[in-house]
Amino acid sequence: MAVQPITLTEKEHDEFVKTHDRGDLLQLSSWANVKRQNGWFAERIAVATNGVTSGVALLLFKRVPKLPFTLCYAPRGFVVDYDDVASLTALTEEAKRVAKANKAITVKIDPNIDRDEVPGLLTEMASLGFNHKGYGGGFDYAQPRFTMETDLRPSEKEIFGKFHHKFRYNVRLAERKGIVCTEVGRDGLQTFAELMKVTGERDGFAIRGLDYFENLYDCLQPGDARLFLTKLEPKLALDQQMATLEKAERDLGKIERSLETETVEKKRTSLLNRQKQTGEQIEKIKAALPELNELHDKYPNGLVLSGGLLTLAGRRSYYLYGASSNEFRDFMPNHLMQWTMMQAAKASGAERYDFGGVSGRTDADDEYAGLYAFKSGWGSDMIEKVGEFDLVLNRPLYFALETGLPLVKGLRKRLRR
Image (cartoon, rainbow, N blue to C red; front, side, top):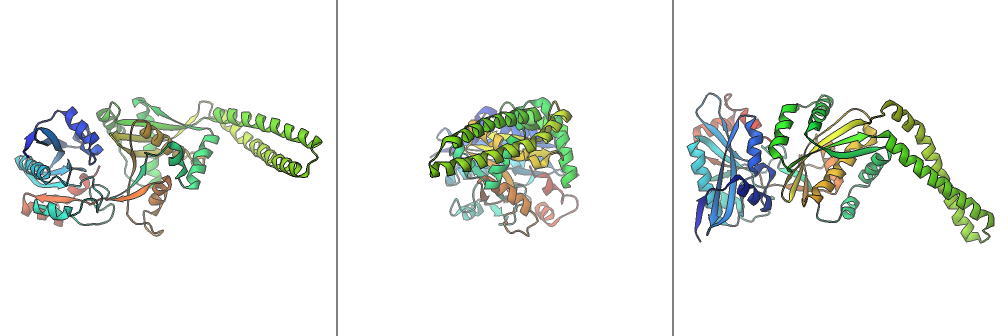
């Protein structure tokens, strides 16, 4: 079985990534364009078995400040069948060759593999010269080692039915409150960036600017980046509530007329129960109308409340970024937004919806407990990845990097997505 290095076009590379079980957004050639804005440059490598592509990798390089060396990182790479030792070995040799040519200190990979998915993987990787970085916490590495993912292969009804009951309620509540979520184009990025600024100030984290999101969106187009905004539309909610009210009042009239002539006790009891339930429904709607009228007067053109960036890579989809305003958070716009994006991802052919990282702990006193509570409410599973492997090419500088030499100690942070 002959395994040889080959050269692929960007299109051929991306087609392989999108159709392979180990494929990931961060291994698409377009991701190199996203990272170029932050000073990274990239090389693509590939190998073929008997003329058929059997493994690829996107290698990102970052120059070490004040030194003639680089760091090499294949985020969620390599994309190869890790049981295919010949292809894995050949791809490793290619990565080593290209990395040395670019004076890399190390080649870091964190493959898209679950922890116990490939028996004997750690032994095999060690035989190729890789050091496994251990099974640390979810946020101890360049990419999250624990992620939350929802299976999109069942029907929409089945997917929705697996949500936590409060999440199902919140999706429906948002719809009743006049929240709508729609996909918008590039011109919506300005609004999204403004929402992100509000979110960062509220939750106390550093944010990306408009230029970053424009670059990301442009690089992943067409089709692999989609922007969604949720909007409060009071008139829509008013129209829906008025239609529901009119129907309920008609139903109540029919029930009351039936009660005038019905003599069978069992049927009368059923009618009386329906009369009570319908009356309560009418009162509830009437109680909500003043608020909706007030909102309609205040926001006749609607009000954007949240936004999300959905990205796609073949059978996988990713909730990459989300942001929300401080207004009407109790209307649950984010819940409707998530469900809308999941539906869009499924319609595009995605089989998994990745909510991103969690700490790996499920106890209530974990500092990221709120993050887990939100991401676990969508019928999602916590996936534990096997973690990082380093192929060391320059041991003295690698040791300095790992032990925190001031010149390079901040570089590990820059590997993050």
